[in-house]
Every structure is written in C-alpha cells, then in structure tokens.
Amino acid sequence: MMDAAHIVRKAFAPVSDAIQAGRIPGGVLAVFTNEGDRAIISEGQAQTVPSARSMHDDTWFDLASLTKVIFTTPKILSLAVDGHIDLDTPLISLLPDLRQYDANAWERKVTFRQCLGHQTPFPAVEPIYTYGRDPELLRAFILQCEWRHGSPVYSDINFILLGFALERFYGCSLREIELPRGFSFSADPMKSAATEDCTWRHKVMCGEVHDDNCYALEGAGHAGLFGTANAVLDFAADLMRDAHSPAVKLMRTPLSETRAHGFERPHAGWSGGDNCSTNTIGHTGFTGTGLWVDFDAGLSWTLLTNRVHPTRHFDSGIAQLRRAVGDLVTSS
Image (cartoon, rainbow, N blue to C red; front, side):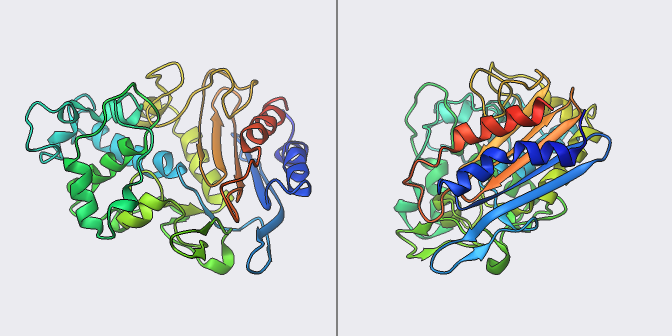
C-alpha cells in the first residue's frame, strides 16, 4: 500500500477539480491506514457569502447524517452489548408512550434493529420543523403521529426515535450526553465551514446545525454533530482498532444488501466507489460529508465538503465526486 500522503494527494484531484469548476466551495480529504499513517489536504473556501474565508485542514464541519454512525449508532449498540436493551425488542421498551392511544399501531412494533437498518415503514422525509417551534411539543407530535406506512426506505425518523430512546435511558437531552472525543453539537463560526443561507432562519448557517428538523428539536439522533477531519479519522481509527469488539462487529454485520447496523455497506453505485472490499462500511451526510472504513484493506478516509453553501438547490455532483475519490483511495 502507498503511504497516506501519496494516497491523499492522488485522491484529492477530483475534489480540486470540483472546487475549480465552482461545484463546491471547498473540501478536506483525510486518509488513515491501520499502520497509523495519516495525511490530510484542504483547498477552497470555508465560506463565500456574505464574506469569504479559506478552508483549512482543521476546519469544523456540520457532519449532518454522520451523526447517525458516529454518535447514535455506537450509543445504541453499547446499550445492547451491556444488556440494557435487546435490539429485537420494540422501541416501546424505552418509549412506552409511542402511539400510546392505539395499542395495535404498527409503530409500537418497530424494533431498535429495524431502525438501525432503515427497515421500517416510516416515510423518507417529513418537514417536522414546519409544525411548530416548541421542541417538546414536536417530540410529542413525533411520538403520537399516525405515520404513513410505506415500503422501507432510508428515513431520518428511525434515528430521531433512537435519539429519543437515548434521552429516556440517560434521563437528559442528547446535548448533555457524552460525545466521542473531538466532536461537539456546535462550533465556532469563524472556524467552521458554512452551510446554507437558510430561507426560514434568514441567515447563513455556520457553526449551527443545518438540518431543519434537528434545529427545531434542539438536538436529535439523526444530525447535529460537528467535527474536523482529524476527529472523524480518530473515530475511524478506533473502529479499525476495535474491529472485533461486539459493537463494531454489529456495525459490520449485514442487515440487508445495502445496510448494516447504522452504516451502509458496498453495493452497486454506492458512495465509496467500486474498489472497496466487501468488509467496508460507510455513511454520508447531506451537507457534503462522508466517512468510509475498509477493514480488509486497513484503510479509512473522510471527505468533508460544504456543498450546500450557499444553497442546496444546485447540482454539486457530490455523488459522483464521492465515488471518484473512493475509487482513487482504494485503488492505491
């Protein structure tokens, strides 16, 4: 295997091209090998409007749905490994008031494992933030709503409910629960990559969560985490080191053709590219972030971009960019 510095220089080429073409403001790519070799590279702008700031290796990012796998999944799996919950029991073991007015509601039968693998009938998206500004009332709404029953799809509601379960177990808000080292639920705006010029908050989001529903709930299990590329790689290094621990084994255990517990696994067209081993897990975030860990190759990488800055309503080509970077990383 090439050294990490060579890999990161080679794999950054399509990121640099995307920046020069104006498809993304900036990006950071970091690579780690199981030999402890690490390299990082950054380019472009952390913010372009209303003023410009440069991107740096230590820029903080709104990690969006990487929250699901860096925070929520490990916490839920830790509860299972320690015997506090059974992954195959319904969420009502911690959320007894879920659809409490209908004992036969399908939502009361949904299990922790099904939520981790996005194997539930919840809708893909729901503008919960449009239903009010009181986070406690929004929590009550989510718990009592008669949700549309559809085919299993990737749904934030799965992890919103897992976040509620964590709050009930720990007896505090998610923002009071201990985080992995190097992460936070907010960041210094002057050290952060900006996200969207929000149409309903009327400002450019920077150091404050981009996800509308997470913002309205004042913390949720599907989004909200901030961190740097080095923090994300530290988390990946821990996964590689603890590859045979019960929790990480579960993260690698398939639940479907495309998903494991929390993480996504390689399949045709997936974000990690075509060269990953079958023993790879990864996940992406809406703001333009991603993390991938190939246990067979002893290789992990994170690509962090601010592709939604200043707007999400633009074809940044992020899906193709992630795959191109993954192919270059793993071909090394």
